[in-house]
Length: 144
Image 1 (spheres, one colour):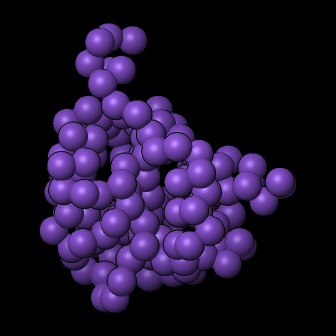
Image 2 (tube, rainbow, N blue to C red):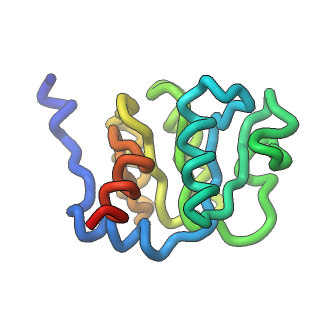
Image 3 (cartoon, rainbow, N blue to C red):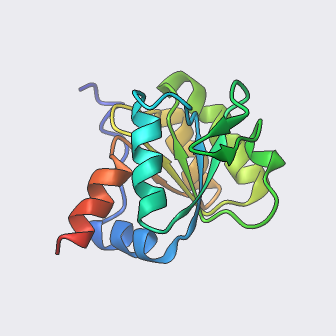
């Protein structure tokens, strides 16, 4: 891990738990219709837990029997959290769109870290969680 990689930190566990307890509407960027993809499994779990899921993927028309939208700006109504299944190099553009439409939380899945996206989100007052699996975090919270 380089010095730059350590130049970020996730919110405290209590804040992550508060986010998971209070959010209901989650846009999943990069959600695939293919059941073998991690994005599909995670979003299916979240649906079963009562979250409203909005698939965001310009290459899909539908995922999990839900109509997919091209981008975050195409979503009507309030979004509580954006869960990102894109590589680190694409996350800055997602964070810029999150800021533009006023979503309070962006969550980058395991293995996804972008210092540039982190800094941009933090400077705009957006809570950002990186390199964590929302399914694992929610499952852990439920088991307590």
